[in-house]
Amino acid sequence: MGMRSFFAKPLAARVVKKYRLSQEQAFERQDFWLKQMVAKAEKTLFGRGHSFAKIKNYLDYRSNVPIFEYEDIKPYIDEVVAGKEDILWPGKPAYFAKTSGTTSGVKYIPISSESMPFHITAARDALLHYVHYSGNASFLDRKLIFLSGSPEMSETNGVPTGRLSGIVNHHVPGYLRGNQMPSYKTNCIEDWEQKLEAIVQETISKRMGLISGIPPWVQMYFDRLEELSGQKIGDLFPDFQVFVTGGVNFEPYREKLMASIGREIDVVETYPASEGFIAFQDSSGEPGLLLNVDGGIFFEFVPTDTYFGANPVRLSLTEVSLGVNYALLLTTNAGLWSYSIGDTVKFVSLNPYRIVVTGRIKHFISAFGEHVIAEEVEKALAAGLAACPEARVVEFTVAPQVAPSSGLPYHEWLVEFSSPPASFEAFQAAVDASMCAQNIYYRDLITGSILQPLVLTSLPSGAFISYMKSQGKLGGQNKVPRLSNDRVLAEGVLRPSHDFVV
Image (cartoon, rainbow, N blue to C red; front, side):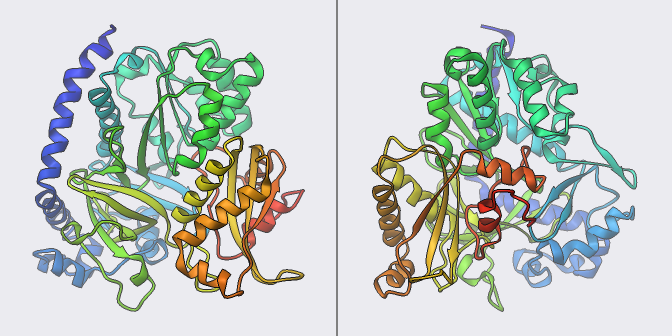
């Protein structure tokens, strides 16, 4: 047993105890964070403009601070980006996390000196929860790879600016630095395909214990390793024990990743965002991710059926219910206020508070009033794979076909298989049956002959990678949207040249 694994277990026990206490005191911790952040920002431009001095409780806060999407808060962020101080949070940010949105272009998300530590400790604590519940810490004595964006940063009026994963790379604890891969030089390569090749060459002969990254890009890494070594990943890396993932629902990728590994492996799911570290899997025995109620974030929840109305319902943690689809709002100690990050979640446990991510509030299909969401299509895909266990899916997306050349409109499922189903008809029927069972509006449209059953379009190998590359979104934290209410993405991925720009 190495020094890292030896000391990890007692530390893990202390961390788990701390989180249990914070869950028991979840209401008090949330109230603490809201009051502390409002008091801290009282004299900022935003605080003065929203009467922070008069806010005594959540009801006051909700009355004075509306819901902000990025475009709403952008005038304030533009002031911060221009170098002005005391706009959203006292002083200047420690960093800007630069992200590319599909509707707002480049986004600058402020990270403060107060919020940065929570990004690091929550990631660490996710691993320590795994250590505590599994009893396994030996992976910490092996090499650890984090497939992330470049740690190189630019400056925006004196504020270091880069991708969140690259910023976090600068704060990896010293005791893990010696085990961390890839090298800093390799990690700074911007072109994803060049970077991937360099990572493969650096790691192919190492004793990897943990691999972390967004599933589709990890799959590319695995595919290249298999191509060069002729071995399954689990044989190439016999010490590989833990896969850490985040950013997307892992389930649609599980079958293919596990097939590449060649054996079952422990998975730790996390829910990080540029705005804050929201949740993580605290134990492999319980569904859902543990909400980070004591992590510098005050959470609000908007039932999705009210989100686009004139008066959206806003709930604190004290008011949530199981099984309801909520849009997630964050108030953070980096100066974001009732900020809609665009994700939707459901609670699967209220003691402790555990959530699952169900999709994006603006990513849905409702061309005919069906309002199909990501959670439903991911479950339907799982039903198709269960009916055709020989099938393996690389990636998929769903879009409406409102005006087909003949016949009724339909939902088109664009799926890239690494191993196709023996019967496309059986796969398609299982997926459609699952959709009808989950969404009564979709079912009624089918039975009422408004829609025909879904149409499955099998895409050639590499279709999504080629498309993402054409959009400058290959690798890093980029993800393929599960579904759209238009055909922009669908037509783009269907074009052989992939020259369609979103």
